[in-house]
Length: 364
Image 1 (cartoon, one colour):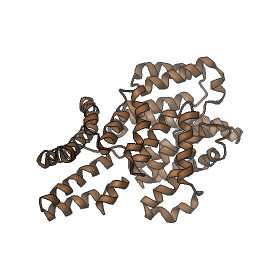
Image 2 (cartoon, helix red, strand yellow):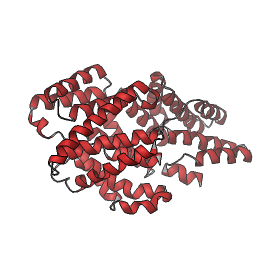
Image 3 (cartoon, rainbow, N blue to C red):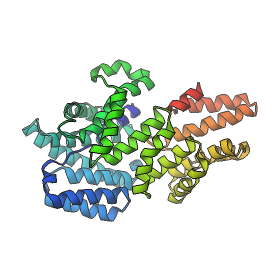
Image 4 (cartoon, rainbow, N blue to C red):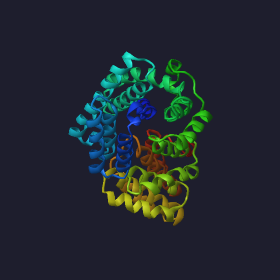
């Protein structure tokens, strides 16, 4: 259930700015604020978003922007209860303003964008915190808006992102989790090839969700297609523009490691260690273990690194599968040492969490 509602989250972090973009000053404020946000210049982005709010107090844009900032600035939100309350308040306000407009005009694409974005984030937050009844309520509301986007990519290119994510995940996610297939008849069909094409077009045609499109193209190629090397060019564009972004650094270190470029990965692994977040530290130890195991053939060091990584927590969205890589590494080492008990132990632990295509194939 948590994973299902996480998918709802990434279906909807998409928005259009309608009349706001007719104001060149506000448009520049939003562009500059987003660049500052992804660069982790949170003071500057807050100032830009506050100006947007002051110029358009009844527009949902600023409230969604603040929520986006909170998600990165206080990652993961579950560890920051005060900021979590602020995050929810921003999303609720965004939805309230957008819904009021949508009720007056069901053809208003801007309000549909904001409704879907706020509801998607709310559903994912509640699911991550085990509040499934609340998550279900938000998710049911959100789906009606994704259908609007699927029909309007020609009118609003920003819809290419949500449409691409929906088309791909509508097929790949039930394949990965057969238990939810009986429930999928509620949702219209998708197409993986169309989804990838939508996302590729979104990296070229969108203004405000270009970074999300680049990030999730890399995410999809790595996790669901099992081709991390194919994901590297998309991440390269992100890391060049936002070299201090923690999510992009993590993605870079992982994709380089899984592609066998261990020397190139060392720089980004060091950056993860410098962040000093337990979630990123745990991931860094896994990547070090992969290097020791596959590049240096030092199984003792690799085992120590994998075991060290288990001392740190993992985060549901971006580091849970990396924990699975550690369990698989320990299982491989145990097999080489002839310890069948530990092989089964680590295999069982890996089976509980791995979802990467390559990891699942290795697990079998």
